[in-house]
Image (cartoon, rainbow, N blue to C red; front, side, top):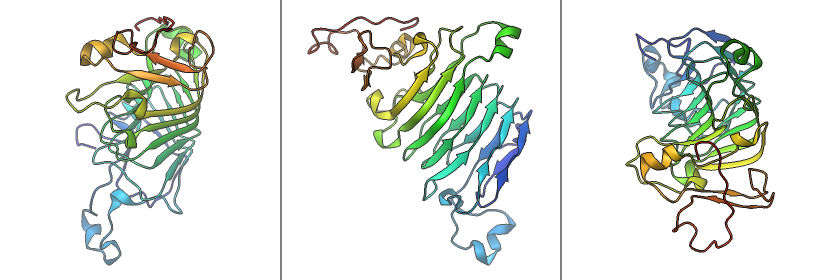
Length: 280
């Protein structure tokens, strides 16, 4: 964290238990994992910390479970240089709601699983940003765009759901399993959204940076799409999604590919069916 944008829980060592806490009203994040390449401060002189690299510590017998974050900028974030535990580590039962930006922000991270999370009324549910070095996971979780509370008090507004960058390498993908998207029927925004940061980086195919199974949407318009704004911003013309089971907006209900409407992408696809959604 920083002196002028404090975080409620600034976590530099994951060998602690964080169970049943509430972080609210922080200028920055509710929980910030900022593990480093060496132990710092007076603890660095303790014999037991010799050779310890906090960045690579896994939870082991410790837990991060049933914590809540609301009314912060971000609910929980892992930030560069990131947290890269040597073994898969589970953040269980995270509830992040009504945060000004992101419920869950993942950056410079690897081998972290968010399980049974509830992300609601944030500007976006989760963001999988750059510099991740291995897959991260969100499983058995719910992403709520607008709850009835916010909808009744403020009316419809555009928010994004789970965002992931298109220009990460395939080995650093975001993996989604059994995610329910609710609260999108009043909006025409992306429940699952591509976005770009550092557009000059070497791009990778968008499908390689996301692997998703068992996604459930309460509104067809919020299903995966290729936003025009991304194409216009980057000039890239080769985005595509594979819909392996025909559940993500195929007009025929059959497996297939969602590709951009240009001659290069359709060169060997003579029987394309147009699919148009707001902003696509």
